[in-house]
Image (cartoon, rainbow, N blue to C red; front, side, top):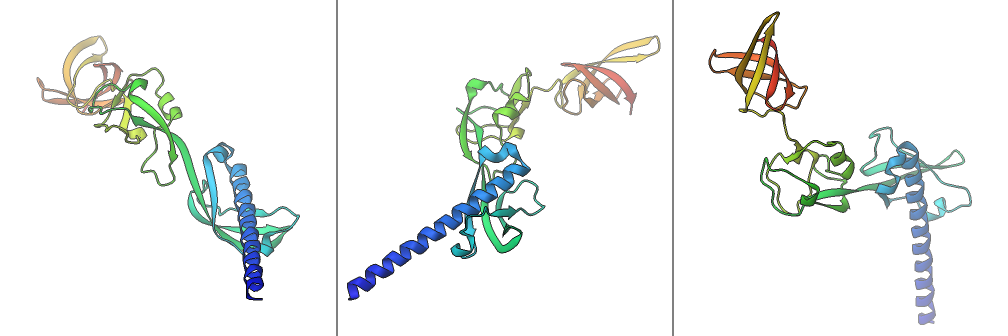
Length: 233
């Protein structure tokens, strides 16, 4: 008699667990669908798990479950509370966790600050980025640099996940660099030797300082180490 009771309790527990798992899958799938409708590009890069949900029997039915995401954040990340409904009838709320994943660059070896960074120096690893500090350096972020030479903006450790701020195009001028500035006022033209007070790319406007005249200028970078005068400060 006691053995039969124990078996019955185990079977009941198994049924409850199966129902709970089925309910969790329904909530997770419906949440993933709602996120994909809001941000289709994320669908393949997120995983949804259920932290808390209503009773499983409330969720199980032949009619599809609908999930309403909170208005903010626009891109759900981490834990959030969602509203559940079916055919317009509220079924309560659930707490879910939205984990983000992406292919992130890591350095294959130590790279000194200012050194060139090439594809040979990087290895991309699929990892969770839900709580990543800063913007991860993904393949698309690296491609955004185009054909520009890329350098390390700080020392990089081997196998460390990289942020977009860790690397960047080699500047046309960096702070302290020597820059030749073309000073033009009507027919009057001078080629002045200056030092950069700011870092900048071609097209950027930076400050230049001329030691000979103890004068600071604003100038537009036209090439590496070259600039055109805009105004005298």
